[in-house]
Length: 419
Ligand SMILES: [Zn+2]
Image 1 (cartoon, protein in one colour):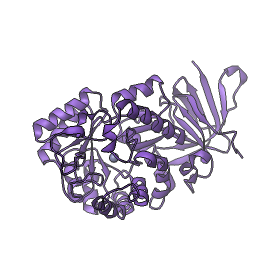
Image 2: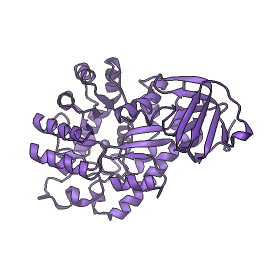
Image 3: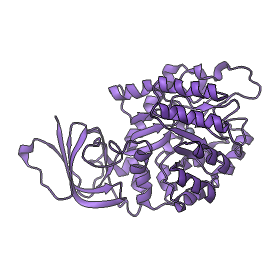
Image 4: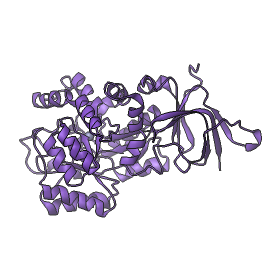
């Protein structure tokens, strides 16, 4: 089995959010087999590949807990007329670029299917480990119901469209159960439900709630029956509270939460996954991309509250995870989330949210998000002083010098400009 030894490493202990100097990490095959908090010189007879991490930070591979790798276009409705093969090919490009930025794992919050996951696992293309939700589940007129007001019947806009961000529509407890079971059958790793209004959908107010309490509970119950969990799109205090009390594990976005709502999240053990870079991107580009006045108004409403929501969640002890939620060409802003989060979170806390806390949310802490014996050897070497500044992660083409996934080096920029 190929053996790699990384020495002189300033290692990020993600579970404690601190750096430890002069560590040695031993990798065999795709897993880490030993982490020694001491200097160790590699001996030639070890037959191991040696990587000298001197002057660089060694991090667990990054995890983005809210992406849509099939969102090849910002025009989600227009994209439903694309051949699915084209969407798949675009998704593979989007995933490769994520991996090159240092994201060795992503949780897809709707759209990606088990086929994309298997293609990555088979090595058909380079990309992050992919945790898929299948189709997001929405009530009629909910956030994943993209039909314009004039549309009648399912038309292009049902889940039968293939591969995209359009949801599957379910009304009533029975249909919700069937929709969840269908995502489970087709290989979902977690279940995405739309529990409140959204920006990209034409007909649902942001402050509204979606699904009845019974429907929310049914979705969670069916997810848990399959040993999965549910994540919910929600902005308003009312929508977040209902979802969390129904047993949802993570709230996606959550921009409008107040302290009382954050306390409910804390009490119920829920995670918050803010996605601030997508609001920044859409504020810059939404008008040019032809978004309607109604959508831009909704955007303005949530954008102004995004940072405050992170502060409120932190103050109440809610774990905050790294997410982005970008669409189309705006995927290029993924690493910009680090810069935005820095306005309200200490650097090492942001880093923890993109590693350890994300792995906890996904119940993958034995395998991902931490540099420890038994975990996958998903590792980054990063330049700069991350305790002070996350700019090297925000500009990965300069700061992220090496990306390793499953013990294999998948991007190596060490020769370019290493000091
Ligand atoms: Zn999303």
